[in-house]
Image 1 (cartoon, rainbow, N blue to C red):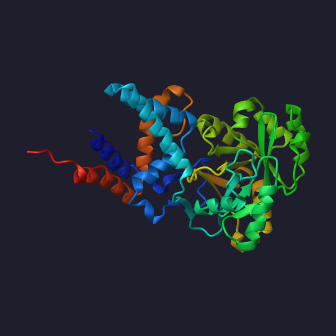
Image 2 (image 1 turned 120 degrees about the horizontal axis):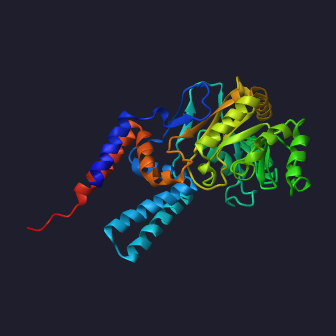
Image 3 (image 1 turned 180 degrees about the horizontal axis):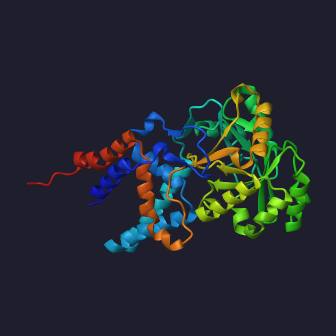
Length: 388
């Protein structure tokens, strides 16, 4: 029965597929064709790579829903306690493999040479909570594999990773182009300061909401831009979002690939998009990559004419100027197709089925055929023959 249902979903997903496997969050005019490009090795192993990718971009609550569905299915079959333990440990093992084992990555592609794909917030081993093997050089290579042309390196309260990434890039021009930045940790508030080259001491402003206000005021005349980070402004400062604008914040993150931030409801995102439209503020999507996993969920695409002929410093200046002047029109934010979280937590009961449907819709035709092959052929080839 499972095979027939899965086959029907895959075939229906082909006819109701989503072009390119990504969609745009701000609702603005499409700057150019942006589509996912997959390594050739995805085709023969499509079910496994797509499952790994999709598990990577689920939120905390969506993983809980997956586990609940798994246990419910087991309960209907009435297995022993050992089966429940084995199934849950298997789910945990699959997640660990998805996060830790390197694999080929899908990348975003654009046809227009003036379009720049960049990440507005990422980390290296110099962040206290990052993978200690995720050096600045590995950060740049990860971004290149995912289709990024450039990435702001924003380690927690240090600029060492950003400087080392720039030095490494100047040596061999390998990986994405590193841009300057720092993530400042304040009173239940994280702020991505993109474009700053000198260390900002968070101790001068930490400890109170008043410190956040003073810091934003100081940065108003700076070359750098202060972007309010997810999930902190949503979790702790939602009622102050308009105060943030008055104090001097220059933009908001509207998508963050960290599991806890992936729970950000679309209704809340719509409020932030409307606020940014009203006050001409930049909107960014971020990987928040700390060196775990091999799937990119979000990309920023900005039009920066002639960027391919610019050196690193000129490109950084041009992109910062684009974000300051363009505000809400400065770039677009593309994310991979998945079922978005819902404001009503009761919808989580349906989330595993919605995720299966969106995963099927995002399969390229060759990948859909590969999934059908794995559904039917191996079982027929290796099933045991009944004795006469």
